[in-house]
Image 1 (cartoon, rainbow, N blue to C red):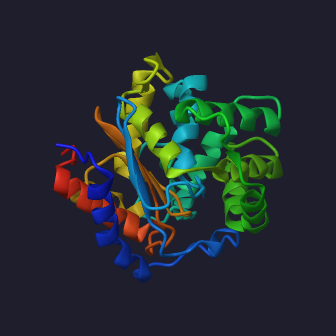
Image 2 (tube, one colour):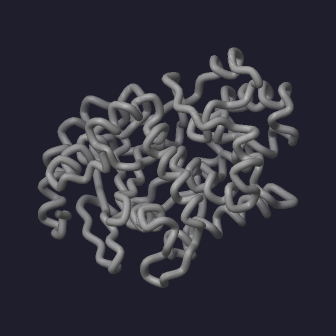
Length: 309
């Protein structure tokens, strides 16, 4: 059973929206602090090209940590799993996404998984290209391809705001450089990473990308295999085990959909073999996830029995 009408979705959005007042926007990144905490929207994209939505789905959202799963897909295609997982692990962590603690106690000092900041920085470091511009353009082209939208770009204001305040990410990079996991200029890597996080799109674009992951890397409208099945499978597995920061276990039990969140309030979901989901609700819980967005996904999953478990 699947949700088929905009009216059904609107009812779920209005049921979930009141919980937004219990969260707060990510004002530690000044540009993100301008968001309206009461915003909530969702788009669901089906393999036949049908899309249903509710809320202000034309509002642009920056990917933030959602970009981690997409950059991982590209790097796995570029370099293969063996190379990637020599430098970053596959294990969930109970620590916050920006923690440095596990790096100090893990031998060798490689990040536990690609969804925490330390791991994502290592993955971005592996993007192929001869300059920041070339590497960023390759990632952007890949994202445009997944979304079927060549007009997607990044928000310069958000990228600049993140670049100027990313002191903890710089610390993670220098720690990783000390242990020979990263071997490039840190300011160049931060330039690339903050632009990656600032790539912006609508919920509709986000749901379209989620659909490609849901369909094992196939673009259902063209039938083209955009990423290999095995890459899509690895990415969806990380979305289940690590995609919602250190709330991933509870999310898997309550909702059971492969998903990735970002501190802009975006959530990308991929219901295996069925459809993609894009959500925007900028008020966050204490873990950094969209508080109303998670409530909305919980209502959706229970109403339509979407859990994969």
